[in-house]
Image 1 (cartoon, helix red, strand yellow):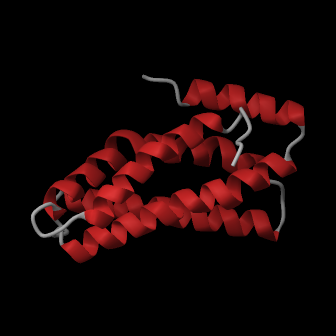
Image 2: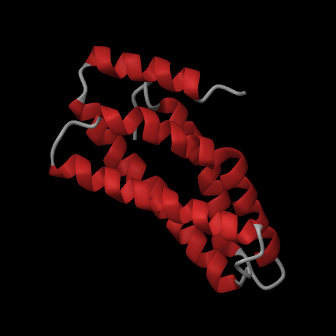
Amino acid sequence: MKRSAALAPLSRDHHHALVVASALTRAGEGTCRSSATLFADFIAEHEARHFAVEEALLFPMLPPGDRAESLRARVRADHEYLREQADALRHGRLEPTVELTASLGTRLRAHVQLEERELFPYIEQSLDAASLDRLGRQLEAGTSPA
């Protein structure tokens, strides 16, 4: 799917998320701990910032209405769930298992698909060219390396 230049930085981030999701879903007994660590580190070191940028820049751009509210709620719930699971793994409150890593991988992949297939197209359809361009500049600034 061709993504607008405005949302391309976030779509590029999703590639790495899908690599992590794949590692999680393929993890076996011998690799579930390292895959869980990969996930927890990825969320803490990269995705938490990605989530914050989406929530700060994309959510306010959504037009009023039920569809926007539904998308916002679903995306926010995923963000919260993924952050909580990563934090629990990082701090030993959750034991990595094959079942858990598979579930996390499935949820992370579904989250990326939600954004790529529903949220981003909705934003692209809802905003005029000038608003998309402004959003793109903000995203480039907000997702640039620290």
